[in-house]
Length: 319
Length: 304
Image (tube, rainbow over all chains, first blue to last red; front, side, top):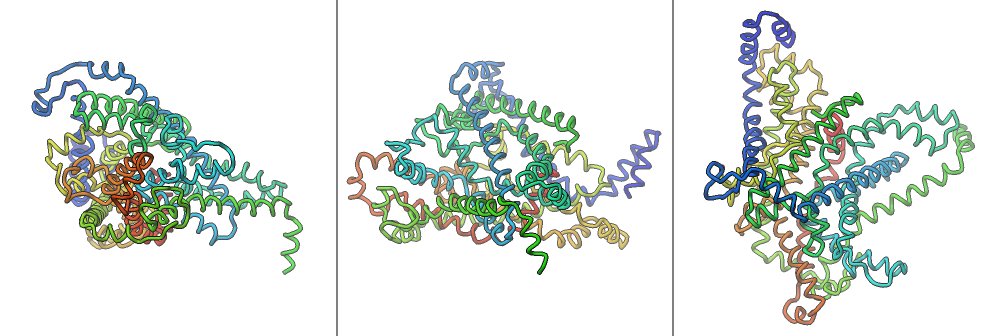
């Protein structure tokens, strides 16, 4: 079937080509029936709202709607970039996103290497099952646990006090300077096990004879990790890194919203939380959409950049 | 028998040290992973007033099942559990239905719309319209706010899951489809009678992803149904308790006695009890699906 399609589209005469395209399409009505409804659904729910981006250039009034609200040009953006809390939220988004990326990548590669060296299968499987667990917990639950653990009389402070590392309990949740790192640590706790899955699967596809050859050449365990395991997961690492560059504006939203409080807001508010605060709580749709649009545009630029990097490096492209 | 001593002679010194250190590190990691979970369980079984003092470790200080008794009497918890469970089941079934079919069509190389649909779908993984435009679409244009369907309709499809299934289908032998075609079966029959039954492992994986996502979501309730008590989900209930424990933790600094006199079970133990109850379903399911979702993740993430 595919060869017929190819042959006819390869023909030079345009009318023939057109007719055969629609004829093929007609013969594929069952495939269309199975895919076009959900395609339209995605157009409506994922692309449809993009019309709403024009509210970024309006003083949107719910009563007047999208078509009658007054236009204000770039005023919403000017207003945003004159606000310290918006600039803070850009900084916080990027900072937490980079911290998450670095902490997340390093910790999951380290754990994957440690797991890969375990020879007792039952033990390996147990560690994996246990470390996958937090991935399945909701952020509400995780933040609740974090509040218990990091409280002034929680486990971490008890440990710090009993080890004599500090005389007074540290207010992890009440001081802005800890917030980014707290988010980084909680995210590692939640996802480190889960993130090893992909690296471990890359490690299992490394040819075992490479390890044997390295051993025969006199390589110890650390040299084998350094010269066989790490090069073996390099392409996975690069693909994930590039994908994460496309997601650099996504620092998360739930954890900052749930864990943050008015005390640490200068350090906890991300762009998404900003949008929620102004858009939903204060009903300032115009500026909130503008903030969201700014984020989306930066995300698109990052995606295109990441995709072209991927092409240059000859890795699989993202789109 | 003789091979073993030879091997032993070959081993380096750190070939003995490393496994020991490694094992200790991994046991420590398991402890760190489980500690907050067990800590929550300990809180949930502790007396409410006593828990205000904090500092509970792995075991309850003053054992009490009052928190569980309290939530089992709470009508709101039952209602929320029903909402959470029913939306989870519905969303999971709908996702499997649509995503599986779509994944099949996009694995057919001869399908002329394949490229177009794939590109349009993959882009949604990176670009979205943002919170406010989505909110306006769902509440104003579609009028779904404040209704049960706001849980179901906007979340019927995920591109990542489609890629996971598509990659799995692409790994099945092409001859399956070809021979069925020769026998005169159309694509709909080929999918439902041949491909779908073979996809059970990957369907289990995707079902787990979707079900966990739905079970764990609270933001949709917050955004669209915050005022509708009968539509609150379990996670939203927990989210509200989280806010009240924050408030009562501040109050605890000033007037523990005032709280002591008024209430036996304070929100923190209640919150932990609901946490335990709402987590048990996931804990029961995921270890059994482990070997499926591990391959599923590996398929989706790299080839995505």
